[in-house]
Image (tube, rainbow, N blue to C red; front, top):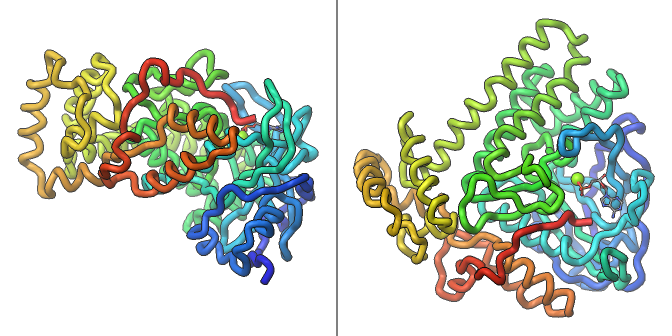
Length: 470
Ligand code: AMP
Ligand code: MG
């Protein structure tokens, strides 16, 4: 039986200036590398297990019934600079299934490709597959990975590399930049249609632009607090990479920190550290201010709206700080926070910074000692901090170890393991890919078989820079 995807496509009903009809470009010799069956079930996909047929469909070489492929238009601020027109340059949304977007990334050029080839190479495709699925398993809102297919074509980067297509699943691909492009073009009608659509799809209880803004802000604040709590650095928090659904989107040069440092940057293109680990809360507020600005034309740019939107944005840092404190307090076994918990948390983080302690392993060490050798004890302040922490835990209603075990993963996708996985995959060996994918699906379970995956990189293995997935 052929593959069936129960498409119900809604984005195509929006004004057609928001997208271009665009078919994916067929590839020479598609080969299925990975297929996420549980996710396919969630989407209602059924009808085939044949890897060749899956490879045909998820490389874009053949379109399933009901698909209405489009490339979406958007704009965005990239590293703070306004880019008046971006859009899916190498991706097409083939349709929506059970309310989720099914998008092929690396499926050939679109009208928004500019000088790009519309393709992706194997490395970033497998990286996004692993990292987005790991994020999901960590309980953090994110786009998902449905399939990875090798194209059988070489593409040119700094050298010829194997091409691949990732099938990405998202609650939607509406970005801050999707609102921005309409606002910039003074297309109030389009803006209203996009707002109505976004509200219906994501925030049905919001009835005004302000209420919508408030909900997006709350979702994004929670998302950033979650990123911070697992040491995640997005790397390119441009407004076009900021989804109004509150899901993590666009895994380019992202990375999880090994040794803790608030100023940590990995992305090779982030020369001034704009998107450093510790800057993420400020940047998200900046991005939300851009969303607010884009919504103002819907209220005739009135003074009252400016004031209301400004208040929402001004309240965001405080809201995020509270969420951040709750997340980090839970990492220390504190389920009912008090104001001075922030001091306890920041003191530990400063000890970790001094010791260049591994972020994930330090918290796991404090949880149950399932990972050791963090270097924390060697710090002059550690025993005083530990005594204070022990006192604070005594006041807790819930067993601190239980709270900590749910907040402190044993496994995260570490850069050096991902790099090793990519090197092996390019040589045709997918064992490490499958092993990482399986292990990272239960990140909170300590298991002897995965012990090697908790080991931080050696000096030689350390990844100091990550590159955009182009
Ligand atoms: P990103 O850095 O992945 O968020 O991409 C920024 C913009 O560049 C988006 O509009 C992408 O669609 C576009 N882009 C990235 N890589 C390519 C490519 N290989 N071909 C065409 N467009 C691309
Ligand atoms: Mg992007």
